[in-house]
Amino acid sequence: MSRILVFQHVAAEPLVTLDPLIRQRGHRMRFVNFERQPDAVPNMDRYHGLIVLGGPMNVEDQARRPHLRTELGVIEQALHQDKPVLGICLGGQLLAHALGAAVVRHSEPEIGWYELQAHARGLADPVVSGLGRRSTVFQWHSRSFAIPQGAAHLASTATCPNQAFRYGRNAYGFQFHLEMDLALIERWLGLPQYHAELAAAGLGQDAASILARTPVAMSSMRKSALAVFSRFLDRIGPSRRSAIETSEAIALA
Image (cartoon, rainbow, N blue to C red):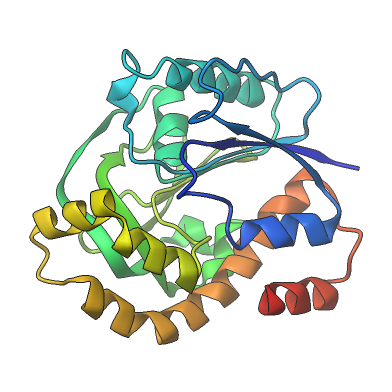
């Protein structure tokens, strides 16, 4: 049975739709929540894959949040062991930083729904090809990563070109949030810190306009998320459940 190490930074940024998919496939998970356990020192040796989630902090906050240095060390360990790594938003930025790439404040924040376009290498990628040529994804970030040297640049949006990369065979960095569901979007839009960030971004949209797009956009993204996440989890270990059973479980979650 495959074991997955999951790094969570705040309660408001969990695995969401990834959680039931992982459980239905029969993988075991160990969560390290650095908001609750800032001094945790995890190790990759007993695990078959690593997922690093998002958070409101940034890579440059390492002096205030030493756990970010711990995470970078574990990411480097996973890379050295050639174990699958998935970094989402902050997690993708940490992965890029561990690989020597810059992470900087982006010229324009992305918050809400955006059209993602896969590059030729993305369309040929064994994981990201699940997105298809064009897809709608949820975003919430003000920083962005450079594509690490030697990595495959997989996808872009019109406002942020560096949206996804693969390093080696198994390490993926995503700037976007494929894992979202309606409840979490509503939660973020209602949290004072997130609400203030949206208001300050000056993007010409508010919580109501984002929510108005959500039913249709979410329906499309859930299909893409199931395809992409299933293909990534295949790299960690085989599922004990059929694809039909898994799909039904996610639909009911």
